[in-house]
Image 1 (tube, rainbow, N blue to C red):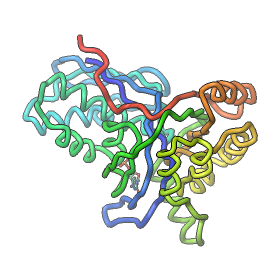
Image 2 (image 1 turned 30 degrees about the vertical axis):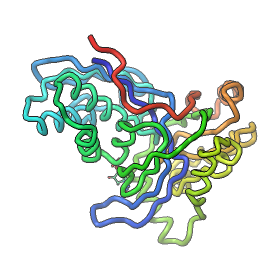
Image 3 (image 1 turned 120 degrees about the vertical axis):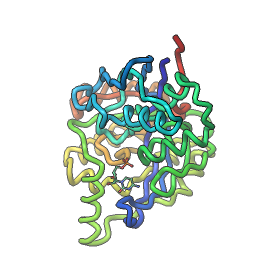
Image 4 (image 1 turned 135 degrees about the vertical axis):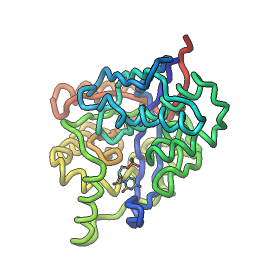
Length: 298
Ligand code: C5P
């Protein structure tokens, strides 16, 4: 059984208050884009994880892996042993702000659900996803959606047409809790900028207008990510200088999402970024794309 799950971008991310459970209240607009991790699930005597591909060395191949946790949680919920061999083929940057770990968890949930024929409803699977991480329900859902709560409560958003993105993968990774902590420190020192109203992003998506969407992209976590990874500031500027319609750090970073007019401009911008060597790697992707889906049954 092979399942493919997409990377996510946050087109807009507003961070509200810190809750007693350690999570922040969020309002975010997610879009799933065409950069995918694949997870194979095969029957086995016990739960094993093998990781290959982009950044595999930095991903734990033990029970702490989010995909392994997904298999374990689904097995416990449906009263069976988590006897499955998971192979993760990664393309989504690790610790990159594109929810690669969440994509792997969503893919493992869908793969094991199909392998074990659990009969769990879509809502049942989504509830398990929310237990695994704030972004996991969106990796199941895909498309374009408004996320509230800690990001796990989803409302589908109407997006006309396709949007073309260039993803600039910055050197290293950023730890999500550390970026939230840095935001907390910055907020104690005073106001840190104003994030656009999600209404602007939603209207641009509805109209299928990349120019307006480019202007409306924003992320409350961006100043914190830039403080921890100062190289992001020139990277954002280079994207703008090279004609991107808008540039924003995705989630807690350090991936920078650059919105362009069409796929042709995406290829041109990606080529320029590669030549300038301003980041570790560059990918192009369009969105929205569906969430975690079975792509092969053996
Ligand atoms: O839910 P997830 O495992 O992705 O969250 C990772 C960490 O990011 C949390 O432990 C928390 O520190 C931070 N976080 C947060 N508020 C959210 C989502 C994540 O503070 N809404």
